[in-house]
Amino acid sequence: MTLANAQDADPLPGGLRRILLRQIPAVVDEMEEAVRSGLPDYSDIADDTAGFSVRQVIDQTVSCFVSLHDVTRPSPAVVAELIALYEAIGAQHGRLGRPLDVLRDALDLGGRVACRRLIEDAYREKWPEPVLTKLTEDAFELMSMAIAAASRGYDDVCGRAPVDVQRDLLRDALVAEAGQAPRPLAELAAAAGWQLPRTLAVLALPPGDHPQTHVLPPEVLADRNPAAPYLIVPNPRISGRGWLPKAKGAVLGPVVPVDQGAVSLHWARRALDLVDRGVLAAEAPLRCVDHLAVLTAFQSGDLLEAAATTLLGPLLELPPRRREPLLETLLVYLRCGDNAVLTAERLHVHEQTVRYRLRQISQLTDGTCPDPERHLETMLVLTWLLSPEAR
Image (cartoon, rainbow, N blue to C red; front, side):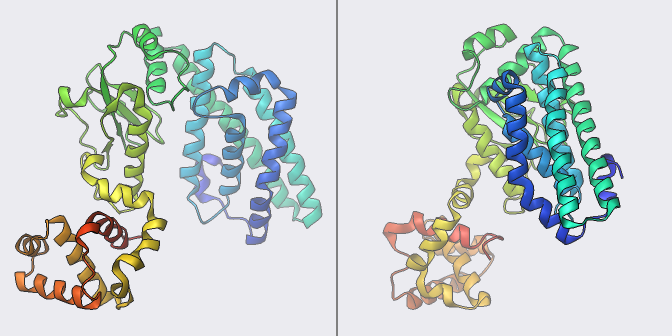
């Protein structure tokens, strides 16, 4: 079995998988301690790097190793995420002018801990010898894959023009959390030859959609990470969107001030996740500002579900075949400004059908629903209740 063909791997017996899963927190703790005590200077630098820390990298690496033999999650996707992570780490080494030797040392330290723990578990749990051999070989192959990915990222940065490296540094800073940018944005923009705009928006692309396959204006900054690519669009209200990639499933985050790019990226990726889960329709591209109710509802689903009984009461006790037409009619009616005629047009039913359903709702709730003063809350609750995941 090779990691490149992880989907062909035979899963471990359920008992062994459960043992490995239980061991993850303790193994991560021990590996982190080994790296921090053995390479303290490297740990400090890694923790100051935007996007990952020593513990996050170890945790994702160990989780990937366990997932390779877990039938509940597609291994190729997990491996792709890890490859993208180590390519980013290698690229960061290149930008900082640090050789990859110290990363190899960190992987070697962590790998020795992992292999020792596997051997201890094998003797304690009396694993068959072929199982231990397989797991050990996979661990070493995973480390080799990580180094190869980091080397690609390192070579990509070191072989590029200095201005391209500066543009990448600027791109990362524009979507960094508040206070995490390494230098002032104006300074980074000047070094990259990029005019700092007043506003920007982030376009999140579906995984595997490579920005280099699209014709982009020179002012657009692109992240080429295959697992989570995105574009930074400066002054989107002024420049227009005719050039935006027509990739189905792409999501345009809200327009924000130039120092709040992390907000636009956060909501673009939230919406991208909802598209992937089938909650939002895949458009080309979808705009977050057109789906505020859905995004808000899924940010607070547990609260809305708890409030549903107060707002809708007896409606929730009806069987689904009666409940859902009433809830859908009420939601569309509220969205249409209490206009039954427009509601009927949107639902493709007769106006009298709408009025009959509204009378049913009023009777079932003793006239308390819809409450004119709680339209917004009711719409959010209905949006959540009618979503595929809440049904």
